[in-house]
Length: 183
Image 1 (cartoon, helix red, strand yellow):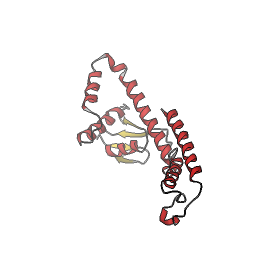
Image 2 (cartoon, helix red, strand yellow; image 1 turned 120 degrees about the vertical axis):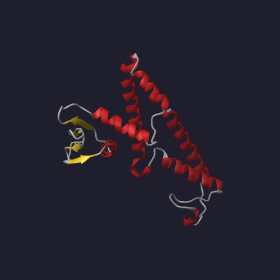
Image 3 (cartoon, rainbow, N blue to C red; image 1 turned 90 degrees about the horizontal axis):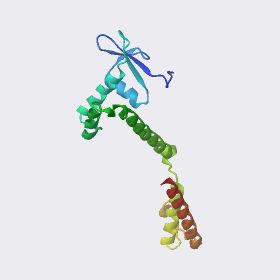
Image 4 (cartoon, one colour; image 1 turned 60 degrees about the horizontal axis):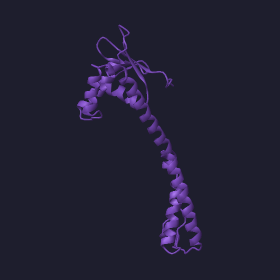
């Protein structure tokens, strides 16, 4: 199995064909875009000169996607990028873009972690319990066991509606505390 930390080496031949050194076959720009979407780092080098061509090919991939109408970069961002090449901002722009994309990636990873494990989200169980208790209170103490509907449970009446209401209030205040900490 290939080392996931090591970039996938793609060699460009004089014929401009791109050669995947791991699988020993030729690849297209779309294949390279797929490797990147799958989380692989790639490095594209000219076989003859050894020049690193990665930036050139990544820009070509972006340009092809943009030309097909898969626009990710708004016109004003493209305009600002062009301006940054002609101003002193060129020293700041790369760090700003890198930091912005790092924050975006971290946010996406945190979101995926919170949704992992069967779409469980923090506080989801507490919200479900609150909904059940609310239904019990609204139906005059008739409740349903967790994970069922009223028809499945036979709509059996339950006692202790007052205790359920107290439990709801407690859970609601706990959720409000958690939300205020997130802000």
